[in-house]
Structure formats: structure tokens, C-alpha cells
Length: 165
Image (cartoon, rainbow, N blue to C red; front, side):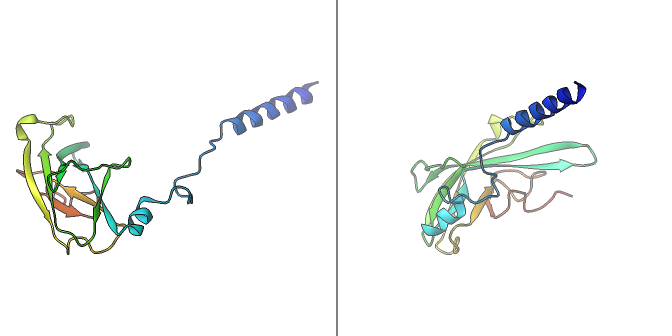
């Protein structure tokens, strides 16, 4: 009788495990119905620019994250930007544009400091973006700490251009 109970329990565990498997494809597996954003943008001769991005830096000696400034694109040539579901804005290649940006610094808990909010324009020239389908980030500054003001900095990386010494 004991082997029968063991086999039944094993079968139930296997069936339960199969039931909990996801039907979704992993992100790394291509899906022809939903092409990656970069391929989609490449087909349209556009680049993708993050509509909003915050800098931060891990301070190993203090074992905490320093929350740096955030930048949000508030206009494209004076119009409200069309932000995609993935948080990016499509911009055409070879076009001059003016991006209106808003920068704000953050408290130690990551919440914004309203008194530090500043706006600044960022000019895109026809030479700024030359390869379609690339993802770009517009940072509020070149580094996350020891900076003042809003100096939009274009980068291919989510990370700050420089680490603070």
C-alpha cells in the first residue's frame, strides 16, 4: 500500500508543477507577432528616446543608493510627446527638433524635491541620431551626485556618464 501512496503523491506533485508553468514566452525568445522595439523603430527610420529617466548611484562604503536627478521630456517641438507603452518616444532620423525637458532632484528616499524643478530645452540636430532602431536616454546630468542644475546629456546607457569620486 505504501508504494501506491508514494506514486500517487509523486504524480500529484508533477501535475501541480505542470499547472504552474507559464504559457508566456520568455523575453529572450523572439516573437514574430511582437517584434522588439528596436526592430520596429529601425523599420520606420526612427530612434527611441526614454521619455523619463532618473539617475542613481550605489554608494558601496555607505551601503545605500544615492538618488540623483530625474529628467522628463515634456515636449517635442512644443507638442506633448507620444509616449509608447515601454516608456520611449519615437524620434525621426535626420530631423532638427527641440525637446522641452523638466529636471528635478530627489530626497534620500527617492521622492522629488519640488523646489529644485527646472526646465531646459535640448536641441536635436540632423546629425544627433544617425542609426535607426537604437535606444537612447537623456540624463539630467553627467553624474548622479555632486551636480547642480539641469544639463540634459544624451547617452546610450541607463547609467550616469561618470561615477562620482
